[in-house]
Image 1 (spheres, rainbow, N blue to C red):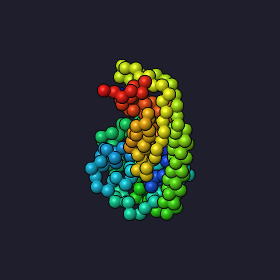
Image 2 (cartoon, helix red, strand yellow; image 1 turned 30 degrees about the horizontal axis):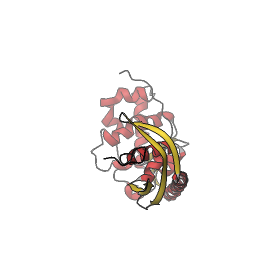
Image 3 (cartoon, one colour; image 1 turned 120 degrees about the vertical axis):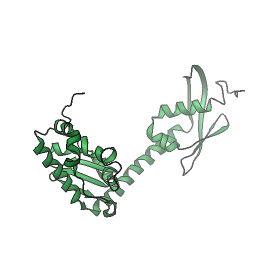
Image 4 (spheres, rainbow, N blue to C red; image 1 turned 30 degrees about the vertical axis):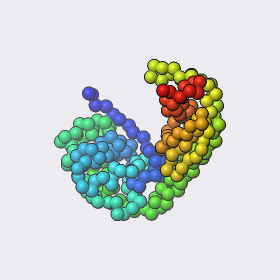
Length: 235
């Protein structure tokens, strides 16, 4: 496979606000070198079995900015600070590092590796990051709760007449009505269909990841194993 230049993008604000480790680069090539090569070498490459490397690739964000800096939210997460990127990697993947990240020569690449190496070594602790993470987590939680509340209000008493085709057999649902009985703290929803109760675990999580029609279809699919379209129980 022919190697080619790979330009990467900064992480979005939401990811940055949730990340415990924030890497800022003042040059596109440095950002690309980190995203295309070094972060992967730390997680499942040269340093995947190295004790103390995991803090750098778990829950991090990388962006372009005015200065080269690494900010962390917790000083106790740092286990190792020295990673000889150029020395360990150039003989093995040097061509890839040069071409994919736009470096003109070995000297320029070596300098870039040293910059990132020093950024990690001289990282800064910033307690404001911890507060930002909490605020962002709460914002996301409120949005999810609002969506779930709206979804459940819409689902309760839902009636429809449709045909659904699953696994090569047709299910006719007439006047199908869903009544929500309860939603527990541990995300178990109890609903009633045709007078019978059904419980679905992790339902809130499922709501967050799917649209309304898909979830209604899933409920119909699961409950239809007990009832046919004319409300009779399967033998």
